[in-house]
Image (cartoon, rainbow, N blue to C red; front, side):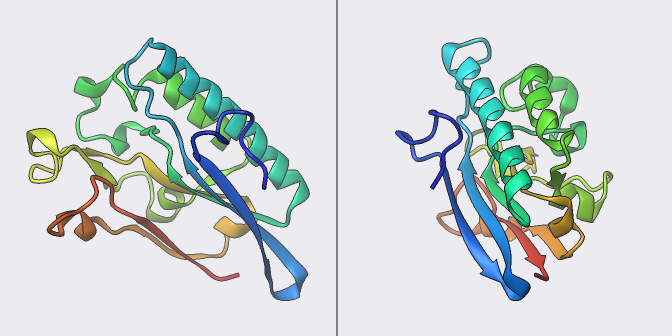
Length: 185
């Protein structure tokens, strides 16, 4: 197992494995839990930015050495305005701060694909997280901070990708809803 720099081993924020599929192709599967950052401009916020930088480096290294890459988890970043319920109100706040978004875009700008956004398009507003407080779920005031990322070769094999938001409505749910991808490998 590798880690995203020295940031994940103590906190169990990153794990990866290699799967073999037909034709001797290998898929590196990564599960990640990016630090929340707690408060903009805090020490933990800058820790989050460093974590995202190390994550980018690790994912790009995997793309150089493996046939396929799939990375999923809680990235704690809503990348675009369509990914938040109120872009103006949330601008500059945690999970939608321009520095976090820029770090996430660096990952995407290096050839890694946001499977959900690519599959459903840029106009569909769906969320994967709703705050327990303030009626976030009941009023659909959420963020899309959970994602599936992949190498381009995997993105071409996506049959479906969706956020299972109904799970958030269960009796004792997480504040997150799972993101599901159906990929033909």
